[in-house]
Length: 269
Ligand code: BTN
Figure 1 (spheres, rainbow, N blue to C red):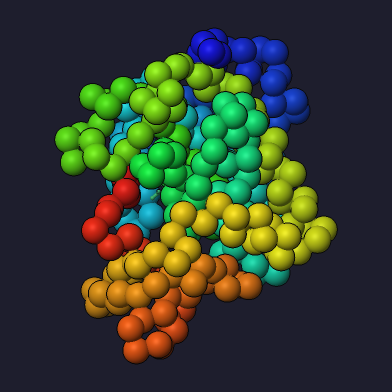
Figure 2: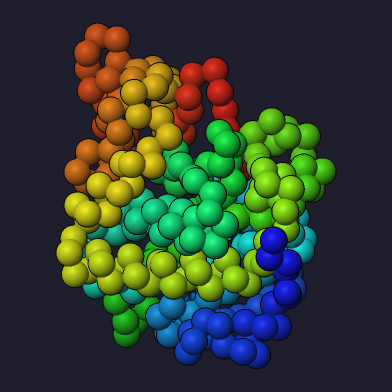
């Protein structure tokens, strides 16, 4: 068992090497702080981490519950050397990086529900929110926000999340060191960005597909206009868009929107 040794360590002993880390006791959203820093030309890979978020953001305008002191809530400023059409693939890349890092630290096995839910034992352990920020002098930044339920007891979440969310503590009955997880995830994100820039998306997608939580299962996709499309998941295509085949054999390409297993909702944002 790895006890949480506290945050001072990463600042004082430089576990994140030369990467600047902003450690905040409380903030609205680390993504918003990182977007502001990116617009002000803060260095690539700057990390913003908060003990608590009061306005934690999830995908599709949802809130991310960020109870104090037990979870990992952070954002990293990326400036990947990629074509604009490749930027949406960063979410899938990040999911893979987060899984690899957590697995390295904990020896657990994780799955991903397209596009960004990190699942442990069929429940949501974490999520990823990628947002972009322009700066006058640098490449467009992608702010990668990661929320991870680490040492959170079930009582830290509101009642509607009790059958959807999990944490490393809930699943394993052990506490984990958040700073060690943070360092491992940042390191893995950097590796995957370099790999993407060097080798393209195909290898990343191959690995992502091995962790696909919903391949072959029946999904309900709620489109932006509120229409519900039901069908079987064919997994992501080569560009990362999810493909769903409905009963009439029509293939739907999902670029965004809410996707849930029929009869199950493991979304905790
Ligand atoms: C989702 O699953 O909908 C995405 C959740 C992302 C939450 C993280 S917590 C750190 C960062 N700051 C935010 O406001 N959101 C992301």
